Length: 285
Ligand code: NVA
Image 1 (spheres, protein in one colour):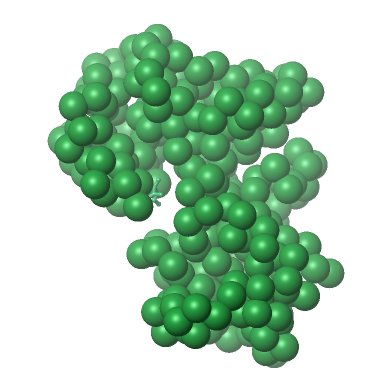
Image 2 (image 1 turned 90 degrees about the vertical axis):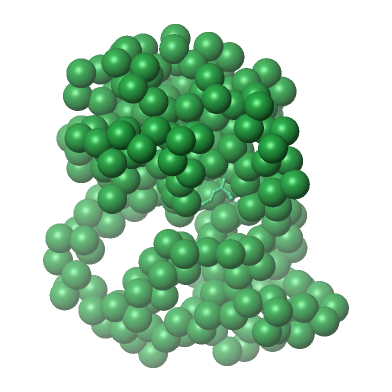
């Protein structure tokens, strides 16, 4: 079936729960899934750098019996002006799914409509749905359940925040984002996540107060202040964000058993303190 995963919002709350249950089973008994993708190939196109996502996809595809085909746009004719539509049409003749890491979300949508095989978002400027699925699985493992838990994101209202807002709301969590003024998640995402939370018993709170955001949190989460493609803004952002760093002050006001998370790559001493990322509350590693 040609079902894409471009956004966490492509999954119903029930489907999200089923995917997390399946993920836990695969993780516990990988041998039971060793030939699930036998005879199938998956193209993985990276238009931005990647460490964890690229390795995760490649290992996951190979360890379920499939054949991963990692591609960078520099290697493809895409880098010489072939359209994403034509790339999708051609790849659909060879592979059974396409994974894409790119800039605009629209590029994923265009690829998905041209391709006849499923397309998976491996990060765009708008969302990082697979990161969110992995994070929810981790939170479930550590806390036992998702519904009712408070997850606080501190820092830039970016792709990772958007997916966490959608995913946390679908799981019935209380999702808070503490960002500097001007760096909030986009209003349409906040609205949609709030609507979802109203159905699931969760809630969404956006604030500029990082301490209030952190108070009583079960999970504290952060990400880089300047995402891929925003490197030129790094110095300017470094002036605005320090109050939102995930440091001992935030951990002190959170729940006593708070879990600390970061999607990585991390910049110690900027968005997260060294003693926090490498400390006893961290499940980053
Ligand atoms: N917000 C970050 C996430 C990296 C995994 C970025 O887009 O660069």
